[in-house]
Structure formats: structure tokens, C-alpha cells
Amino acid sequence: MIEKVVQTITKYQMLSRRDKVIVGFSGGADSVALLHVLKELKPRFEIELFAVHINHGIRGQAADEDADFARGLCKKWGIPFFEKKVNIPSLAKSKGLSEEEAGRLVRYDFFQHVSERVGGNKIATGHHKNDQAETILLNLIRGTGMQGLTGIPPVDQRRLIRPLIEVTRQEITDYLRRHNLSYREDASNEDIVYTRNRIRNQLMPYLAREFNPDIVESLTRMADILREEENFLADYVKKVYHNKVHIFKDLIKINLQDFTDLHTAVQKRLIRSIILQLRGSLTNVANHHVEAVLELAEGGRTGSETGIPGTAWGEPRLEVEVSYGFLIFRKENKEKKNTDIDFMEPLSIPGKVSIKALGQTIRAEKWDRNWGLAHSPECIYINADRIKGGLWLRFRRDGDRFKPFGMSGTKKLKDFFIDRKVPAARRMQIPLLVDEESIIWVVGFQISEDYKITDATENIVRIYIENQNS
Image 1 (cartoon, one colour):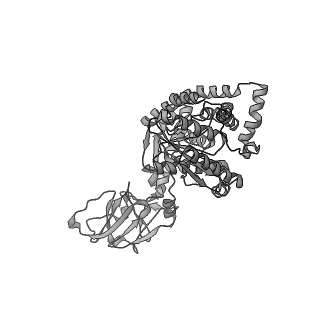
Image 2 (cartoon, rainbow, N blue to C red):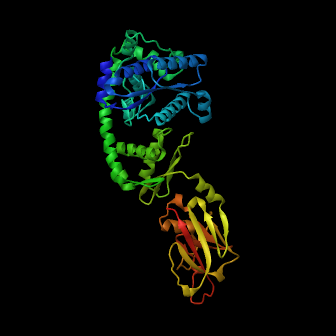
């Protein structure tokens, strides 16, 4: 079996000289075989090993005994051992996750912690060929796309490696027996409450008995074929992403026509790639969320929008909007939304108002015409004698009307924004300078006709954006 593992490591370029490998070590059969094989291969690949054990707080004393066993074996083999005990049921409940999801999060978070502590650059887990076949069936039952049918990747993000992925459970059992290696049995693996256990203990034996004795081999061979096609499509989408997608700090956009010209299969992958870029993962992103974005793009109506949910552990909700020929994805900004609702501050002359959520400071000061009038979208000069009751800064409200410079009548502020192609999501984040009766300035855009400077104006106020974070 060791030579078979070597072939897998070589084929997928899993290890390099002087790698520091963090090994997931539960003490079960798969992890014992993995750690022993890697220990035997240490001289050949010149690697260092570090074992990581998670006590999930589910199986009580049996779990504590697993930890004792794993710790003792690592001491015997001279392998540094790191362990963590977590109450997974409690964590899963508080985060609204399944115990399996919560366990996975804790596991990989601790892998990362240990990696940073020891300078590790690879993480090895004990997934094998039977796990691969079971995962493919599980994904098929759930209604996955091609990516799910490729199963568990041998190498994930060049760092997570699975050296046993081409080895069967029977080969692992034979290896343990041949080397007289003991291991811990997890009784929960037989509990058919869990879907994966039903697949392992009921469905797979039934398929092997009634349809195909080599079902594991057939499923994994299919996964290999689909993985080649998946890799081709992934590379193609990367090129499209590089050429068509515009990336900003908390926002990604693509020309709507460029997007709708793409094949639907590419559109879906592109949507997922953009979500991954902004959120950091695709957790909680279901097919119906992707379909909702497709419908949004197909409609092409400016101002229409949909959302992508966030996660319980802090990955943000995304807003997706069609805006004047672009499909725009952005992180939801709760701070700005709260400010939009509550913000209203008086502006003294002289004085200033800082709007922290927007990164803006608005200043007002008395001005002499002889100093010059340098009008711009960021700087205005108004007739101070027309101000009624004082100046205030606030955000838009339903029914707001405005008399743009050069017009004889008023128009809805909403129509003003539409004429200037201001995206709907941004309109509630544009401050308004007002007095007791009127909107004087749509900040960064235009002054009101009623407050303009004329030859007869005697008292002038200069109002400007002191700084603005883009």
C-alpha cells in the first residue's frame, strides 16, 4: 500500500522536500494508517509531521479515551501532538449549523492555528477511495452539479492533501493488520441516523451486491473523468473572470451584455466565483440563489435586486443589483443602512459635520466674492440670505423634491437620481444639505436654483466636502 500512496503523492504533487505536514489524527483506522504511512515516508520525502486531534465533546468518556490513545501513539512514534476539546453540539446550536458543519469548521480552524504555530504548509487528511465513492453518491442524492460529482479532490488549494484517496477501506484494514497497528472504533459510524452512514452501511453494500461488485471503482473512475472536464471549465471561467469582471474593495461588477452573452453554464460558474471572491466561501449558497441572479440579469431592469445570504459565523450577506448596464455584487453595509435611517445633523456657519459611515466631512464657512468662486460637484457657494432657519445634513426621505440649478420647477429627487444614473443602492447614501423648507444641495451633485449666487447676492456661504473616501 505504501508504494500505491507514493504513486498518488507523486501524481498529484502532494509533497515537496522540507514540507511541514499537519495530519488530522482522530485515532481511527484511516488516520492511524495515514500517520503511519507518512511516518514511514518521512526519510524519502524529507518532511516533518505534526498530529492534530479534535475532541468533539459528543461521545463523552469514549472521546476522552480516543484522545488518550492518539496522544500515546504520537508519543511512541515521536510525532508532536496538538489537541483541542470543543462542545460541538453546543456550538452547532448557537451558530444554527449541523453538527457535521460545525465540526468541519472547528477542525480546519484548528488545523490553521497549528499550521501558523509550527510553520506548517500542508494539511493531510485520511479520506480514502470508499469515502470518495460515498461522497459522490451523497452529492448525487442531494442533486449536485458536475463539481459535486467529482467528489473529494486529491489536492485542495495546493495545501490540503489526501494521500489515501486512491486506497480502498479494505486495503487500509489489511495494512493495519499486516503492521499490527491498533486503532479506535467510533460507534457513531454505525448510527444510521446520519445520511452518510446509511450510504456507507446500507446503500453501498446493496449496490455492490445487486448491481455492480466494483461500484467503488466505477464511481471513482467517473469522478476522475468528470474532474478533467471540471478543470477545463474552471480554467475557462478563470479567463472570462480575468477579462470581464471588474473588482473593487467591497464590490464586483460585470457588464450586463458581456454577462448575458455567455453560456448559462459559464454564467452560473461566474456567479459562484464572484460570490466566493466577496464572501470567502460558498456556504449557504444554494442553486436557487444562483438562479435568482440569472433571472435578475435576464430582466435587465435598472434598480432590480436580489440577495445572497451570509453565514452565522460572519461571512457577509451580498446584494446583487442591475444598474445601468452592469450586474453589480456588493457586500451589505449594515452601518451605512443604519446611518441612512437615523442621520440628521445641524451644520453651523462656520462649522463641520462628519459622516463616519461615508468617510465624508462637510464644512461650511462665510465667503467673500473677491476670493473667487470655484464651483464644483464637491464645492458650492450659496446665497446665505435665502437660508430659512439654519442648515442641516440628512439622507433622502420618501417624497423629497428638489429644484435643480437652471430649472424653473421642482422634480422628484428619485427622478433626479434616475436621470443621472445613480444606482438605487447608492441613493440612500448621498447626503442632502437642507434648511427648514428645501433641499439646497444634493451633496456631490448639484445645488438648488433657489440658492444660487447672483450679482445682487451680498452674503455668501461656501460649503464643501473636506475629504471623501472612494
